Image 1 (tube, helix red, strand yellow):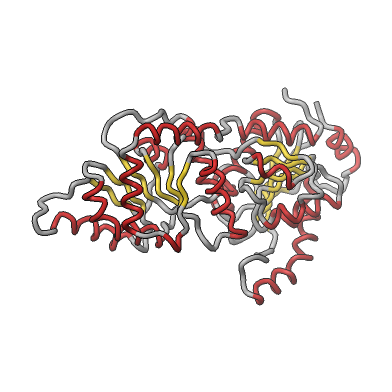
Image 2 (cartoon, one colour):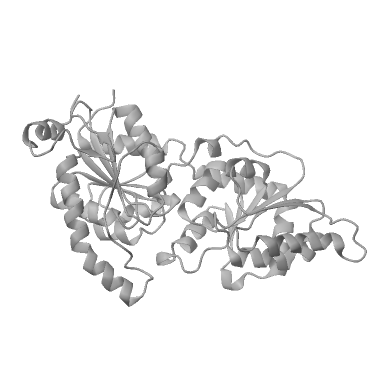
Length: 397
């Protein structure tokens, strides 16, 4: 059935030109509901948004429009997934220079105006803010126009855009119990991640394996700490296998450090084996091979780790907005799923000894794995789509 807002829109939105299109996609009133997903910037925002869009389309026949910015990864991922994308011009207000903040403040009224125009033309039943620069203007415009709004918050403490709209949104889908208190109507749904992470079976036996990564660009501090810890790790954890994604910048130095173990006097071969990558294309497959991870603690990484049930040593990015990586990491640590070390205290010997101790303690790794999986939400996309549909007044087929 159509939602009450859709019926009203069909009768009252004569200004909408059905011949117009967004990125060559045409929209019809025959769909059960219409949804806007606003935000982006990074894969951590866009990939969950695409999962929600797919679920809305599959379960509710929804027409979906994305609103993003020109600088974000949504410019590549959203059209590739077959969805239309409209852009607003807005930048950052947090952790940037005074000049950048001033420019963003100058651009904000136009961004609100443009977002409002897009809402008028598309006539959505619900607007879903996924975080990122474009989320704020679109959500605020929806609130002003009395369009139902749903905020997606993957971090323990909401990001800036979601904090601004927290008091006004119709509902919020959150990953952690602790986050619901920031919103009027928060529900713990989890954050969508690729199904492949949920399908990773518990690792039983075989060579103990360590996966080290810092996002697609790598993490320089983690790479340096690993390089410093190799000789101690060779002594403390003989026989392990290391998979290390360094990013482009540190690849040559890291590879040389691993290779140097072979050339050390009296060492014909290193006491562990290794693979060094600039970038790992199939991260679920890498997770499946690993008993332990060393990584950052951004929201998408945390969601993938809980889905896969992998123990982790978290090194939070210290300059993350609102210190959300540290808070995310501590949330998992408090559940017994992770160990946390601040980047400023990350030292090679400590890292080697901690890796060796964890890889040598199978019962503890199994407890950490179970604790991580307890925080996973395999039906996140379905549950978030259902929330959006309820707010829009649309029932599932």
